[in-house]
Amino acid sequence: MSQLNHIELQNLRHLIGSHETTYKKLSDYANQCQDPQIKQVFQKSAQDARNTKQQLMSFLN
Image (cartoon, rainbow, N blue to C red):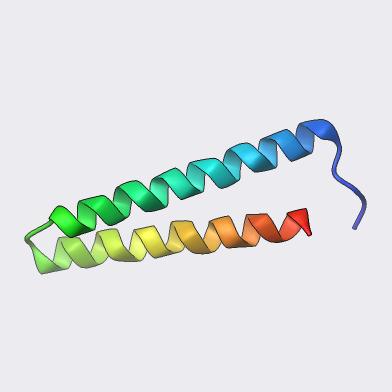
């Protein structure tokens, strides 16, 4: 794979940060949730955000 240019690197960092923020918020929502089904949805969505963040970080290697 070719090297990332400055704009691509900046965009990648932005996406990684956004997914980390999403993960943290959804995890907080899940921890505050009383309904088990909704809690599960938040937990799954949080994990999906974390997985996507990890995939995006692999482009930095």
